[in-house]
Image (cartoon, rainbow, N blue to C red):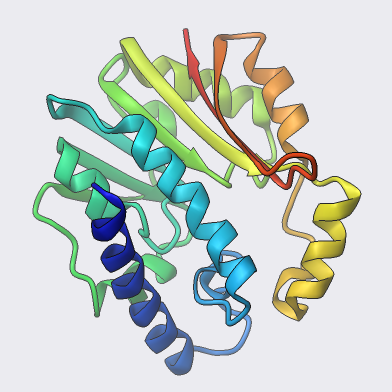
Length: 226
């Protein structure tokens, strides 16, 4: 996906999210980042979409992946892209309302299977079977991080990668949340990216993808391999 294609991708999804927000109870989709992906402030909006662009650039490959897991898929904002680079994509989340809401305007590709994490645990998924697991801005929400990471790494095949992004939770990030508006004031996060990284280093090696942006980092993105 080149920059022109990404701009069209972003525009299409922004329009869908804005339509969904106009139809949904205020605040119901805040945790799924709907307000962020459609924020009127161009800097805030750019920052959230830039995270996705950095991941897309990194995971693109000359040959399609066999299987990808989108862990904590939220609104499904990555799914149109992932479905184009893999034979099979599993979309997993504990709250499927955001995805179902977006589906009305951006239908899922046939190679995307949706799984309700409230009914199907990670241990029920096939072990050693995924080339790629995408966990974007989700690991800061999980209650038992060591257990979740152990289960995620068990799903990766020998050459598989876990792609992670998350907030720094530093003072600038906290100030930014307040400036962004009341939609970002909820106590949604259990931890920041530093704690997530430390836990992952107990299980895997980490390769940096991007830090957004020095000298005032708000988000970090990296890949982890067993």
